[in-house]
Image 1 (cartoon, rainbow, N blue to C red):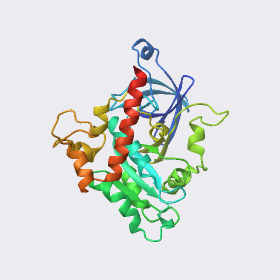
Image 2: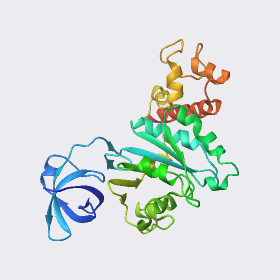
Image 3: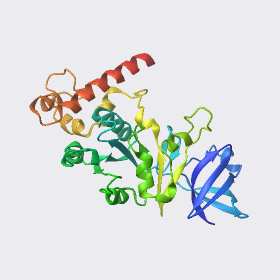
Image 4: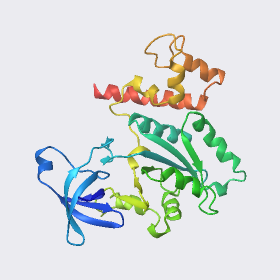
Length: 293
């Protein structure tokens, strides 16, 4: 039987893409009996019926599953920021990286609109601290075409969650990578149902062979509900690395004696700005925990 990927799910219909063909499918009743719910991103086995319809017969094993948005098999999250208009926001980037690390996903950082910089080396300065932590990162200008090939290579063959605030150029970037997509500005968010009279659903876009993207707005509006304070440090790669030298086990890296993280921030061996973001997020985590109890 043929296989495909669910790119959209609406009112009990699952839209399965197999190459260039998309079929509107129903799912076998056995899924409901087994407590299984097909998700956008699921790889499935299906039976074709007629030219454009079919039946989902089997869900292939998932590599992961997200609750917000409900999505399966995400390979990586592409955190998209502009260098100008709006200005690069490192605190929001750190906030989104916490969410990505919490979900045990790979993160790719992409800076757009670098043509607005007088010196493109500034883009590398923005990205270098994250590259040193092991994150893949690239900058791009859709106006000049610089960096487009590198972004293409970072996305190729993967299902990527595309995250970033409105105005950073996500749709423009996708149109540059896949001109036939013809997305208008804001179209991805409209398809996710944040407009006034739109249907609420997530949709995957196939941008080229074997390569898919989906908007993942949850990563841009991270709340710390349900997170325990010790987990936060594990979501900061630089803090987690330094934490092994802390004097006390269970150190939260705030005001404890013998804290290697605080000492590192004071000595400049880690970013003082990243440490300040960590302390701010730690306060939010503690506050959210207090509200739970």
